[in-house]
Image (cartoon, rainbow over all chains, first blue to last red; front, side):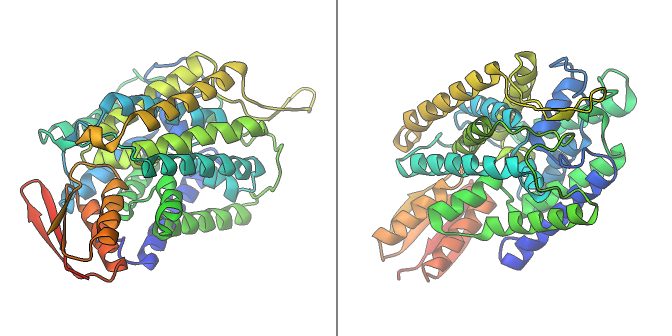
Length: 365
Length: 69
């Protein structure tokens, strides 16, 4: 099965993934969150007790399903390769930046597209930052940036993250060890079995289509290649139709209750850091989970970095807060990005520049 | 024959190196990659340049032999 040899097949992959996200939103996931890698990793980190924000703790089966879906389809189609050794600790730091930047904006690139399809104009503003971040990463690539070569590793190494994900699923189903939110976004979720199946399908299609939100823009800037953008375009159209059909399409900035804020400068800078870090790491947060599933220990380390980055975002008060309605006064309370989050984003961008221009291809040979 | 060793490199480096080689060299080019999706990307790159190619599996990945322009 090859989904990359025609734009029609790539568009089909985007439609399938869009339908999965729409179904999960319909069956209980927060409406304009639907399927967010950063938010769901943050929730899973909370379920494991890595942070203690009670409203965002839930072992999201979607994350588990994505990794396992990619693992199973790559083994079945002989694309599984256990590889490791391309600057793993640098990738860990890039993973932290992916999570911190995303949670300042309140969403990974996947959720940015979902928010855009729901008319959230804040997400359209953040897209500017994301494109600029990807563009900066492309500039670094043209200047010879590389994290060096990965090498073939012991076959089991690449299967470790999928096994760990399976372990989290077992803990969620068979024990009461994991934390689970009673209110807030963490308490809003589709039934476990639907989320798991959705994750498996999404993971399999993302693996076969090479879906990547940073890669789609990177390829347009770098090679005028629109293949990956076709997937994102069809995904966006499906979510747009779903949002219009269900009355969730509200073109506005300050909409209470949609887990978004209008702190535009910090939305732009947060997603700038994400776009930049994603190009340096070779893929967006979603792509990292998929690569980890198909055997890349380097991407698995990036995923671990995202878990720690997400936990720190809440332990140190870095994450943005959504605009909300005060139930008593019925006043709209604007969300935003706290000072700690702003400082963290600036540090993240500086670290991206250091990584981008301190790692040259010749050193990796 | 010019050889591009892109084994173990992250996307989009294998494609960038292939592009560079195809632009600089109208002769045959042999590209080594580790993973199936990189092999497909290199093949796509050769197609975009109107070059014929043959891909074979090696001990640690794939070799894409791109014919002269």
